[in-house]
Image (cartoon, rainbow, N blue to C red):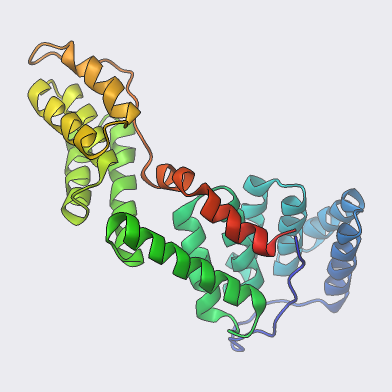
Length: 271
């Protein structure tokens, strides 16, 4: 990973604590990490975190070290804390976005990169990189779904809420949510598939089969719908689907299909 240079704050009225000695120690530790002395650097930053938990660059540095170890799940909370302390910390937003990109987490990646473009200097390489990713994702989403990026994110939020309701066995609430997604994207296979599960758990066999058939009409090789249809077909009308079912997460399914796109951009900036 390339160490990103620090830019001057774009929003000068924001108040935060800066300690020159701590800043120097952070720079030295990150320099050591770049030389391969990651364990020693991590020890320094760990001590700084204990002594100065209110300084954003210390949390940022620990996030960078986690990224160097490819521990992206651990890195993201450190970038989040740095951003909480200093919301206009462009480098932290970028590294947060890149970490989500590595984890194939579309929504979080896009939101972070949009913030980079919003508050960063357009002349900086990493700001241009974030903008390129956003544009490419927008183009790909338009090709795949005929939705704009903003519409896609809105649909994703609606789907995630419905998906959570389904996991909590709130079947009717989940159904309403998936129906909202379909009003925005009538060809969304996963929503039809998950609606089939909801109807099955409500004992509405015919509606379940209709939804699953629609999912398979859109994608004949859609495995979750194939498996769930077999389970629903064995039910009698009024009989409810058992506890086990195969659901699909909206954006992770998209991400896996577009993994090469994610890795293409990821490789442009990270080493």
